[in-house]
Amino acid sequence: MKRINIIINENSYPAELNSTKTAQAVYDALPIEAEANFWGEEIYFVIPLKMDNEKPTERVKVGDLAYWPQGSAFCIFYGRTPGSRDGEPKPYSPCTIIGKFKGEIEELKNLSSARVKLEKI
Image 1 (cartoon, rainbow, N blue to C red):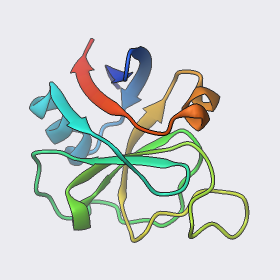
Image 2 (image 1 turned 180 degrees about the vertical axis):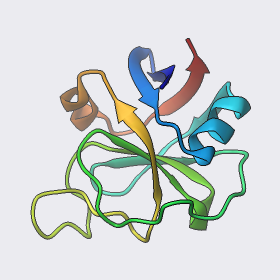
Image 3 (image 1 turned 135 degrees about the vertical axis):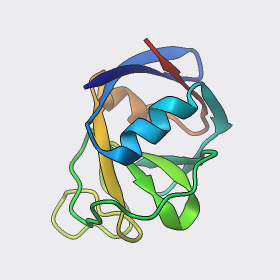
């Protein structure tokens, strides 16, 4: 596991990346800073990475971090998305889970805009 900080606006949250090749590529590209978008209770933003889905899934949980190849985006799932049917988030299309958010995820529900920075610890 590789530890990173996710800084959203002025708040810093710990996270861990898993052992996938995609997570390693994200880690190698850090630091990354971007203006975030929202899709329901998902934050996503474009990162400088072009990869195929390593382990495509549409089954994600609150707190999952994912790479969405269709948009070259880093995703943070913190609640229901427009595609949700059972209370769990559902990505727009298949993505690769690359890690887990370790901070107070409920705080993200108060955001209306976000500048995000990913950095190695």
